[in-house]
Image 1 (cartoon, helix red, strand yellow):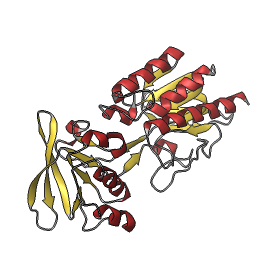
Image 2 (cartoon, rainbow, N blue to C red):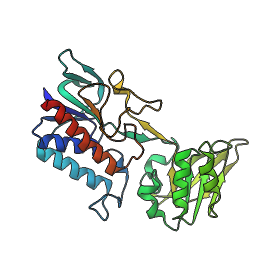
Image 3 (cartoon, rainbow, N blue to C red):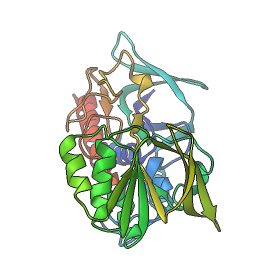
Image 4 (spheres, rainbow, N blue to C red):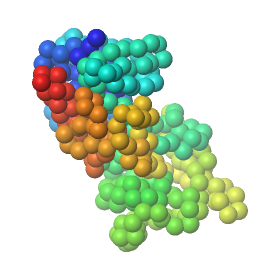
Length: 303
């Protein structure tokens, strides 16, 4: 039995492991796909303290190396469910078996929703981005598009309008679904225009880099080729929290309900990173959550 099982090996989970291990706790990290989470899709990160510029993969590798050096155990397994035993210990069932621990930290993160069209996955990090705060500066002075019409898309477009030559917002509906004040502020920008009732059908590329998109008007099927040097897909996030059923409360969007203390409704189960309810989802805030959750778990175990 381990002291702590951490589910997810993104920045929150890896940081939690480092803090727990330094408190002499035995730690098992369970990860179903790859280490680093969403940050591995960023070819260049320039807003993380201590680095003028670092790739997401390099930062992930450093965190993994540090966790392993501290003594973390790692298994590539997909968690299916979590249960609490009568003695308060927890059982984590995976696609490969079962593991037991005294405490659990859920750090499964959230994934950006994709359009699911041709060329999309190949161009993530090569012209397709999801975060204007993270990647907007790389598109300064360029022509970009924002896909979506909700609050996230409007906020992304407003930020980009101060950096880019032009911003085109493409919405599949006939109007924005975000707050009217955001829409008004955005459309007051001289370098912003919107295309409504239109969907993206394909991402185009040249030499491995995004060169434009193909669109189709919903009303009549008219197809159009549009040239852009960058596209920001802003159609929402999907938290990976199904394993929390019966263990932690989730909001209507699926995020685990928790505040800055990273506690859940179940004693001995903690949450960290993008999968919890929070206002800002950045690498720095995920790492802060990882430290907080680990310290809370350590205190729980030391009682």
